[in-house]
Length: 104
Image (cartoon, rainbow, N blue to C red; front, side, top):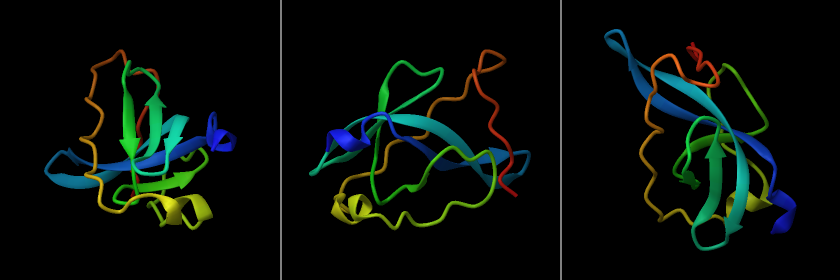
């Protein structure tokens, strides 16, 4: 399980942009993996770790746009599908360390 620590991934959160919902990518780094819970990920600009599970739209690597697709690794199959999805990272004004882009 240590082999995923430090891996980059992108999680897409649905956010309101104007009057429509869009998928916004957030890149982060895996801090640890718990086989019962899922991946604990640190996003740039946020002090806390977020729990990422199969309920979330995520993909290995850093992606700045494009729709999320299902992760197809053995690790993804091992994650618990019953864990609740975390709330999206809070949005910060002007001090964001990376720029989320419209996924469409």
